[in-house]
Image (cartoon, rainbow, N blue to C red; front, top):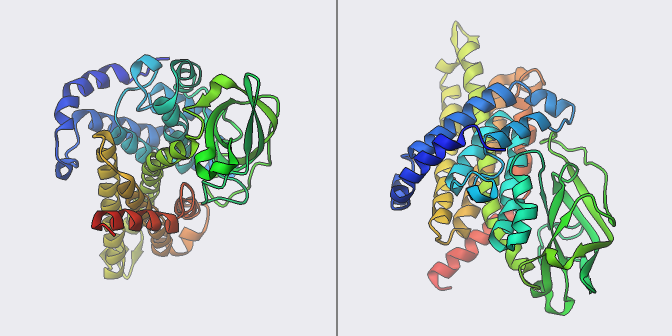
Length: 409
């Protein structure tokens, strides 16, 4: 299925690609025509298709299947995947812009998009064979099918090197046993990138990555989690019990799993930062809209200095986090190290989301506490952004570790 926006966007992208690649980081805020087109397309789609339905999706824990398929038609479910594999063929900055605008309309749709792009398609695109790409990328570019990423386990959320799930070679197959927890897109996904220990003696260097179809014999799903927020995106456990994975579904070489996971999470943090930005911006939108209509002492409360200070702080946090996020995307696109920058972006954007959601409720007062207004949903949706794909505490460790390297410590 070809995207309805791709022909014109691809033409403009080819015209701007070489020029944009030579821009300095400082000028990244001057978006190319391609990125402006993408931004407008995503903004219009989010306003028309996502924002009016977000409360229903949240209330009913309803996977937005129709909207995800339309996002696929727009090319948003495989932004960085080359055209020859069925993707849009744009860059990571385009992806970051897209996730933010989609999340601004519905944070659940934003994380569904993010997981499929960065956590599922990303590692297969980088480490997969031609056969794996044909089988596990192309069918997942249209929004009809989505994938997931299975790294976390019940007892090792932040310790990616402590995989207790095992994979043992048996003839022309690998046999997987173990449980993966907190898997986003877990119920709806039709394939997963999964990590398992193939050589325990080598510790993290004994972890390998695999691609497993879903459903398949030996793979069952745990209960769908009843979450505080992001309710339209399913989260569940994947339970592997003598699950047979074909030999050809080993991703990369044996023992490369930890490296694949870390590189994937670096990129994924840009996606979560973008999702958090969308939530932070939506909270600001809500606060300004309400304050402009609410009167007190004969004037709109926008005239009150206390409100102005809150709005200023909220806007500052959004703009600062956005620049960090776009800088991380720029560095990735230009094949420069970006681990520290991705962690900074994720930390700043997630903190902006939780701060803005809190302040939005303060500005709305009692109206912010009821589900008639989106402020309380933004508040619930924001909280997870400081937890998944690396907690805020983990981001600080990553940042500090890279700073020490820069100083030669």
